[in-house]
Image (tube, rainbow, N blue to C red; front, top):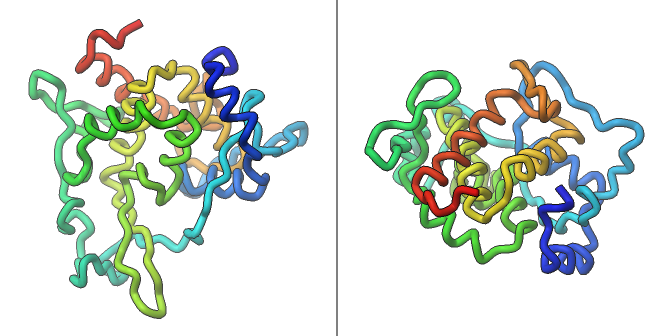
Length: 241
């Protein structure tokens, strides 16, 4: 990981005070989502000082309290003044297939075509990400963050506030986007996977097989990263190293 950092990134890290442990732990839990099953706990030897491989992580404002909506048929999903009973019917959150350059669908670890919200232009975001620091880009993937593509916000309803709407069908797409966008920034596959693994070292829960190389991540999740990483290289052959 440390060898991936440029001198500019080191300077950014030095000027950065990093995360408090409780903030880092919360980002970890939110970013990966909690499900019943195996819990990856932070080792006693980990100081939890918000430092990743020698670099301080950025301070992030966390306004979300974990109270997300998972079923619009039982909870009020109000967006732009209209209530929806299905999150995939919300304008901008309707399913769009992820495609290879030849127009064929990208297949996920489960053997099914990967779909994501139609408001997302993955290529445009990947190009915009190139001008951001690594720390800012990584932070954008936090739960309910700017690049958490499996969630979108409701209206700010009086007495309730704005809440993230979770669309499970977009879970693979959200992970693929991590590999695609961070790959576009020139980050190695090991580096981006290690960032995610480090977050999950604090607190993540899964009920599925875990990765052997990144033990705090689900194997499916790492496969999603790889799909996104390779898709960017497929669309941009000059990016291959």
